[in-house]
Image 1 (tube, one colour):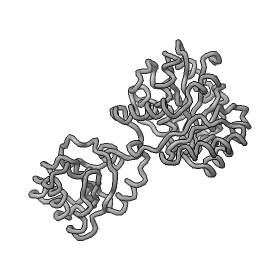
Image 2 (cartoon, helix red, strand yellow):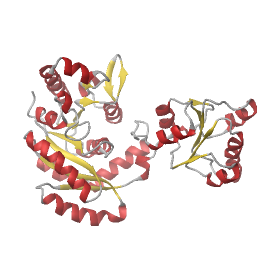
Image 3 (cartoon, helix red, strand yellow):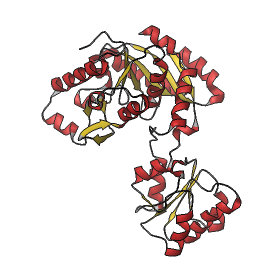
Image 4 (cartoon, helix red, strand yellow):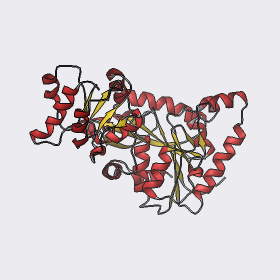
Length: 363
């Protein structure tokens, strides 16, 4: 396997810590040093099918944003399908999986100045089929950056757990990036986190402030994740959801919460809520983020005509309002290739708040 091309492995302490966001920003920043950059996500768990190949969705994001000029199947060599673990435990094929990762890396690294390797969670993810992130980093002979959420006590505790697994595999950790830190506390958190990490022989590479835009889903994303039907054809499918209101109250009480950025969830037979949502347009603002009608209850023809004229999305789903509200709350918001404003923000955050020069020096 290629051991010459510089590389770094991005891991995290838990799901949704900002690993993909960090990778997306680092690719842009590192291009200033290494013009030809490759990317690989050796083990992926969220994938889509493209040309009968299962490709991790983060790989698709990186390729579409940066035009990496490498076959998708090489950037995403292993997709963990629902029955992947069961098949592995029945008939282990570890050596074949390792060779697949190594050969994929060789193709990704071909004529590249640098390769960014993205893990699939904390150091132990994948242990059940002998390909934990720590083991994959060792297979790729890569140094590691750990991304964790902002704070002092819990992040350092979680980093220490991950550090133990990487140490066991003989993998060097370059340092740690704290993500989603309250902007007003950045200096305070950075000071004490640096002290705490130093006691673990780890370096603080950056502290990224929390940005609400990065954690708020668009209505288009909500529609896809819920498998909802769209009742109208508005242009504002990219409206961001800032707040969720369940319309289970009297309409006059519910309407007091109606403002831009609000997603209203209500039973499909609550036509009073639908009319109140339409009235927000008469008050001179841009209306809501959107409306979700639940219980597979379709509005009457008269209400449908009003819905078709609404500029914000109106969706209908089969679940009840409580289940829908819970699902929206639990959504793991992923960046999409067409979210140019969000991607530009991510690039700026990494360039400003992460010591990219120190990363290059450590490699």
